[in-house]
Image 1 (tube, rainbow, N blue to C red):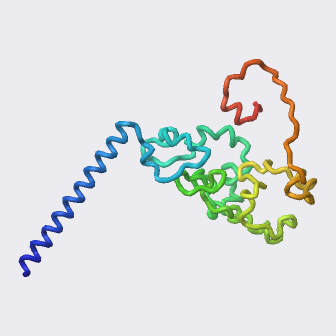
Image 2: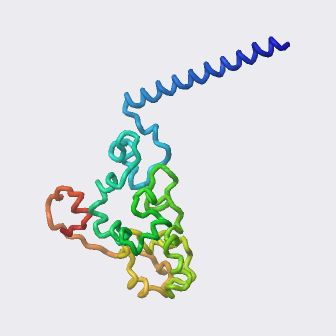
Length: 214
């Protein structure tokens, strides 16, 4: 009985080893075929954010080999867009704000914008209350107009953008504060568009990011 048990155990080990080798060979064939046919999207570990989904078929747009994305990679497209970043790197290199970097590493783009993970709105993968890492006091009495506000509503409610505080029109909010969220008879305003050129201008991404400002 003991010899038979020993033979059976050896057979099981040999079968397991053969199965593992077979799986490894199949994976190598699968990976090789993916590279040969340029089907690299099969390596995506998760969903890409809405703003970057076009890059699903162009890994090299963001990655060099299998290296992680760096700030330099992000700036290839977003440098002009972030030229007037209210939370820019220059602000947090100031020793007065250095302590806040221990709460949220805002000097690294991927601290908030890591792709291929579950994404909240605006391409942010952190929880919506991320602003509270530094601004908890604003909803606890430091700013009277914000006392009692929800900690997860800063950007999900459409009020604030981390990079550009000018995105909210406080004057408009004050003017319409007591109005209902929807008009009694919703409708689109009449718009008259007058073309000033006969042909479309040549696309210029840097000009688009700067909104025509030089």
